Image 1 (cartoon, rainbow, N blue to C red):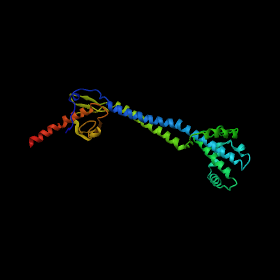
Image 2: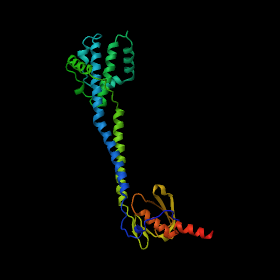
Image 3: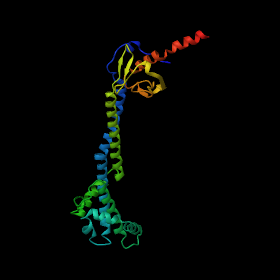
Image 4: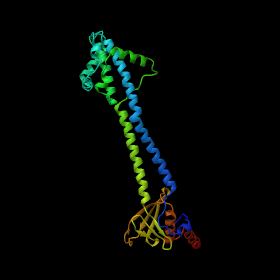
Length: 291
């Protein structure tokens, strides 16, 4: 039996299509917009903010490399001028990434008595520079050619000695995460937008005289077709209509109806329920009389 009241004027008026609930539309539009903006923020970070940070770090790493290359000149005269440029950066980064090569450079760099202590330190900073360029997509000869190592070192020293702070290194994962934020957020925004279109396309119609409710898909029910109106999720605006087995199309089925997405439907269903099972007030009066 019904335990909610309904608007009798709404129940007595025919309607060819129930309108969407403006509050539901507004709520979904706001959520969709927020998710879209977060995705756009991810795109901005991935395509502009983070790459700029990575380029700045690579520039700082270049300064560190040139400083160590200049010091390595004491171990191998002419190495500063001769080897500061990297003609094949991809190949060089692969060489420096080799496990044994990295371990040897780290060991010799930490060993002040090593005959290649300064050169090992130079190679470590070279690796850091090339790796930073790779992250921002600039690992090519154009960005690793150094025409005048001393002039470049002087310019970098002037620039970075007056800098407020050391730039934070950028990792490939940083960019991947931002691209993922964009992709996931925009996928959710698209889903919600398509969901709104889908809900908008659903047609609920009402014939007041016969209390016939036409459902999306074209099937219609009347109070006589209702076996039960299940309100187990009424607090979430969901009602389940169990249809009698005698119904031609929907016999034995349970139809879930979201009464929040469309206006008027709640009043129609409550009116059908009262017609089919009587009102709560009628039940209470009968119990009182029997007492």
